[in-house]
Length: 392
Image 1 (cartoon, rainbow, N blue to C red):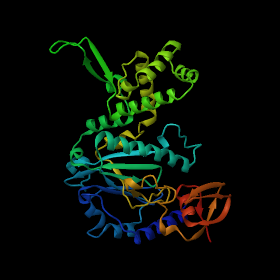
Image 2: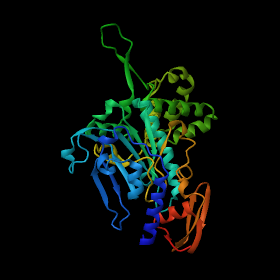
Image 3: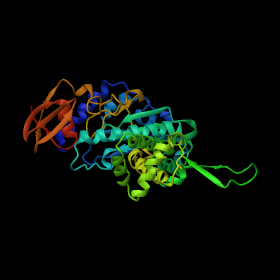
Image 4: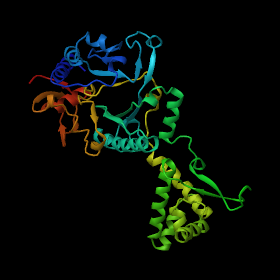
């Protein structure tokens, strides 16, 4: 990025902060604050308390004057957040933070996948993450944030999670990722038959409601209902498509799906070994398709710096935006975070090669050379390093 482009963006970021209303995170004065400048070396400035950062003023005043490229605060809360070393800060606890980055999603290749396509895939992953956190952990009071870049952050600030150490946070990560969970771990086993006080000679295995067991149970019920609706030959073909399910197992599983419907609806997967085998195979698919591919180091790092909602992302010019859970489906990361500051104006930029920008419901094809574009398109292209500022 050349000097004129850098100075233009720095100035316009300052204009944005001048007109913005910013809200602090809970316990903002107990957190470390940091920011990245527009210097050519992209200097990171950190180990500041809120008071250090603002000099007794407010955050908007600091941001308007400094005009940083990126702004962060810590997940951790400290006795002395401005201390120059982590050991001297006096850790009190940390938010539980989850990060979804479109670049790291399975099936997404940043070299061939457009920015819009990556964000759409990331929003699907966000829905899965929110479901797991709310349904499996009971974390209802979530703060969901669009990062302004490639993904989303989810913050949990419940009192009983603030003191969790790295090992406990790692266990939560493994659960969300579906790592190290075997089918036998989710199956509930209870004794049946026999007489009171004596060991039962038989056991019944079932999939209870909730968690990965509940998701597998729903998937099994849906699959069996699909089989029942098919012609028999198609249903048998569908079953034989599974690895390890041959002619005999397929016929037995289809018969069990028809004859033992009531037991299956109660979660019993012991109606026949063939059904148990199908349930195990579907469990593997459930883990693969319904896990949330979060960035593990963000969640386990109790000292992590995370982007401040309301700030601008220096790599896109988009706003780091809080999203109410009820608004997740309606939220469009290519429309809603475009700052008002950059709307309604046009600017001239130079594109060294042809590029396409998708924002605010439109696709802009920018040919090589000097071109006049809406300012938010130009800011996006310049911030991502695909264009530079030129004279009007």
